[in-house]
Image (cartoon, rainbow, N blue to C red; front, top):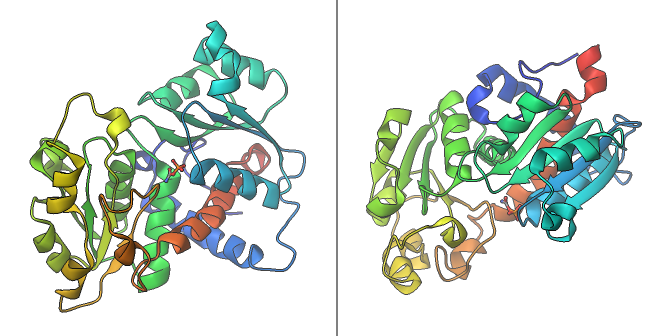
Length: 310
Ligand code: CP
């Protein structure tokens, strides 16, 4: 039986390279399953999973819900905007009330960095972090690195440039951890005001010129500007950001090689990436989304309480 070294998925930082490889091998099996005419397996029958989202989401929430349904789990969805949080209930009370209804696993998204770690110290149920503040978004990084593996045959030795708002991005940090653990070379690129100080201590390169980053890399993972998390203005206007840091077709055409274009979504077309790049043959943005379901099925399966007991 394949097993992970962790009992919750709180971040990529806590995973071993062997855990990531186990998740990828399991995802290969589920990728085949979801491409069958009958996409459902009974693996998590009698397991109840709550998707507890305190922040907006399209891809991650639907992807987890589909992954759970494909595994035959019972699922419930919690959305903060229609909950009793509005009446003053705390995060922990909310979670304990959901767990009292015999829920086995929680998929949690929260605007506060560390919310999932906090909950893991207070409750016994399995927790999967679906994005916590500016900290980590582990399943996004797993599906991103898995997508690189599927396209390139190997992650080791690939040069990956993460371009955009690195400072406010949980996707960037989780990707850096996953890519480094699997032997890729990583560069972050953006205006200095959107790159954390001392980022090089994580073993990554730093570049402020986008064309140079594109010339260096094999894969460009483009991030949106996360205005909802910016406390002060990091650049004068979106128009200027787009002018200097937006990925345009002529920049890609000027390269003497074909690079892979990725984006975790949601895309702000015409800001960090132009439509003719996002929709080009080099773009694997929708493959990332497809792979996300298989990756989340693998994570749910490997962390399910029934498997942990065996
Ligand atoms: N990539 C991602 O986390 O997208 P959502 O915010 O739509 O879930």
